[in-house]
Image (cartoon, rainbow over all chains, first blue to last red; front, side):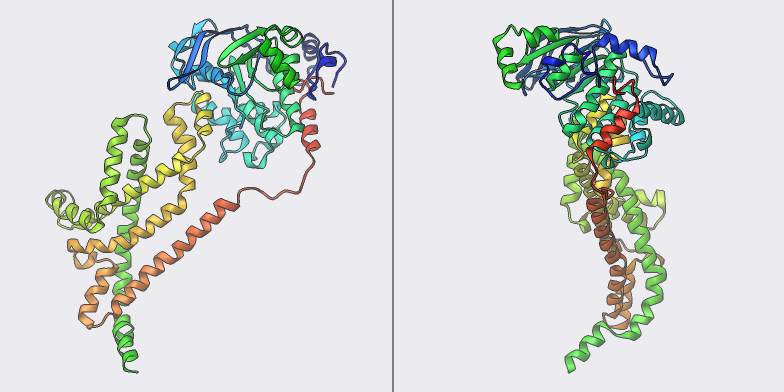
Amino acid sequence: MNLTSSSNTASSSTSTNMSADKSTAKDKSASNNPAADVQTFHGSSLELRNLTMAYGDVDVLRNVSLTVAPGTTTCIIGPSGSGKSTLLRGVNRLHEPKSGDVLLAGESALKVKPDILRARIGMVFQHFNLFPDHTALENVALALWSVKGMSKKEARERAQRRLAEVGLAERADHRPRDLSGGQQQRVAIARALAMEPEVMLFDEATSALDPELVKGVLNLMAGLGRRGMTMLVVTHEMGFARKVADQVVFMDEGEVVEVGTPAELFDNPRSERLQRFLSEVL
Amino acid sequence: MDWLNTISRTFFDVDSMIEVLPQLLGVGLLNTLIISIAATILGVVMGMVVAVMGISRSKWLRIPARIYTDLFRGLPAILTILLIGQGFARFSQSVFGPSPYPLGIIALSLIASAYIGEIFRAGIQSVDKGQGEACRALGMSYSKSMALVVVPQGVRRVLPALVNQFIAIVKDSSLVYFLGLLVSERELFRVGQDAAVLSGNLSPLVMAGIFYLVITVPLTHLVNYFDNKFRTGRRRPAAPTSGLKEVKELDAASPLITGSNT
């Protein structure tokens, strides 16, 4: 772990040691590339316009606007119940927005069939949501043949490659219950990546993990960002947000309170609410 | 010990028991199994339809499923069998011929499907919501996510309840005799009863009862076996391991993905 090259390391107060500053990491991957077929991604842009979402009569997300440039990582932080997860679920329409718009690659996501939209957006959940009666390989392959229409053989081959990329080649035939939390979450990430999404959503992906395994999964996520994936990450890992994010969003009570670069938000929080939040968590 | 003698002659008269044995084996057992298994297969198929309708988001599917279930679960089995068996006798004659046997199977399967539908519905609804969400998030349609992920998990969970239902059907199959079966179509109960009339004691019926137990008791234990297997046999036993093992595994996996861990 190369700690010293990271400009933010000194001020980070969490135990999560993220990889170095983005530009050097990218150079690295270009220079000593051991596996020739390591994927690079072509993330799409994502834009939320006045997005409002409701559960019944209660508006849990109010007029949220946000722009995520292609290939960048946006971390959403904030207290529980502030609408972070709801926002993610609005992007892939697991929960239908009440008003406003979501633009994926410049086009309204609300005008596309939800199934087609979701095949373009990967999502990783806090509790993994792996299919317990499928092996790791089958978990990854399932949507490839059932949604993408690949042959089962092709699907399994691609699934095997994606599993290898997250370090689980040898556990391909394990069922989720025989894997640790960290391994399960890596299978879930491989499952989402295999669909070749344009955007990845992470909903507190490390909150249910053993403390020792958090770093590995976060590193994996940071790697995706470096390879060009557009990511929207709801997280409580401030160290990750600080080092990996291009943009950090602080939410409270269903609204965006502050948006900016990690340096702006963590070092010079403008709003009193964020100052208070940071003083409690850091 | 006169009363003991009476009991033995009434219930355990070996001669009449042996006499009825070939018929119970060749006719009764065979027909009971045919009726029960056919009704169960039909019941499972219809029950699955009822269950999927019952959890649909459309009330035009949900409400009919509800009414169907309430109706066939709420009526006495004998009443349903008579209503179906006699009410549709003419229709049945044109399709299956004069025997009421097929109608008996259909009536039993209607009753069974109401119960099995509820069993499936409970099983499917007990599957964690995250499973369906994970499917949807991957772009699967509602029907695909149900068919490939949610329903199989739900069904696996209710296998013990399904075996119980089969036992109930085996017992209810005796009611089909009310429709008046041909000699060769008689199931266990009817064979036993006919023989009991001839022999003048109840021993043939006791023998028929033993046959029912031979079918149902092993199944009851099969239920327990299933139940145990699905409750406890979940995880491969593993020795305690160090968390470092996995940390190393990930570090070694791919230096590109894991960042600069070299």
